[in-house]
Image (tube, rainbow, N blue to C red; front, side):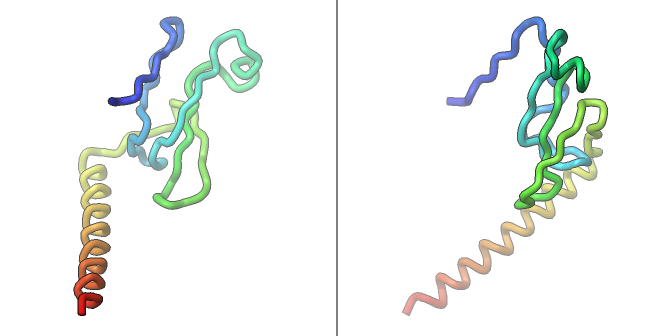
Length: 103
């Protein structure tokens, strides 16, 4: 069963989704500052996104919606292809290790 997130009707809908790849990194979290709250007064109302710039990197960066830029379709394909090739290489190494240990 897929998890469901409910957004109150009086909130704007987020422009970006969890795990979406952007030029700034992969979106790992989001939070909303509703109008009329102290945080919205201090930082501006709307969605904020937590992104990890590189996989397995231990630092999160926070961005407002207007600071995030999507990848072009070519950039997205390139990133995903590189990640697939990386994991295929890792699988080949593990398969080789399995073959060397059978004896």
